[in-house]
Length: 73
Image (cartoon, rainbow, N blue to C red; front, side, top):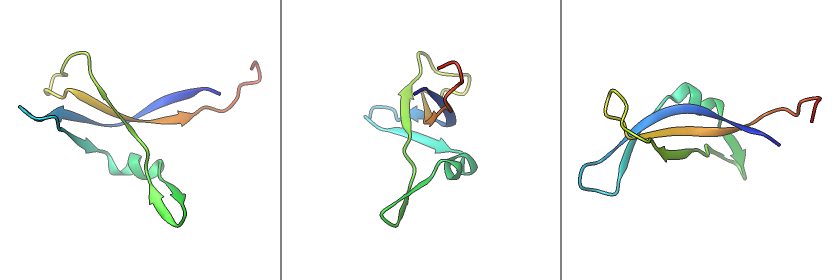
């Protein structure tokens, strides 16, 4: 089973704190929501970038998307 990453936002380390503030794209976020026991959830990952991007963002946010099985597998 293969997974790919679907990027849904970015974040920045808050100066002098162990906090990462993130901004998420709501349209993308809603595309990846799921129901569990009558509640709606979104499961995502926050990963540190190797170096800040051009806007000073230090983290990226993504969901893991299950890829369909290929005929070759």
